[in-house]
Image 1: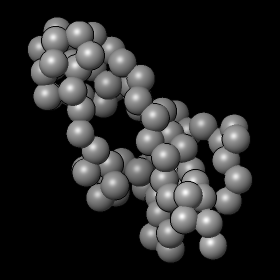
Image 2 (image 1 turned 90 degrees about the horizontal axis):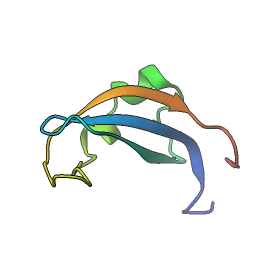
Image 3 (image 1 turned 30 degrees about the vertical axis):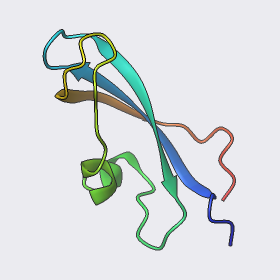
Length: 77
């Protein structure tokens, strides 16, 4: 199996807690038995808890997820 295979791709809209600027971040989910395959599973997953955020505008390290979309384009698993 290809170690770089992606099972799902999500786009997170994250709002900086400090300056309130929204940014978009892409999270690629690798192929695995317990990989989240929907938004609800992603929000409950350890994968998302391990993501780190640093604001591009003010360098704050705290952000709030305000939106999630699933991006199936270009995913071949």
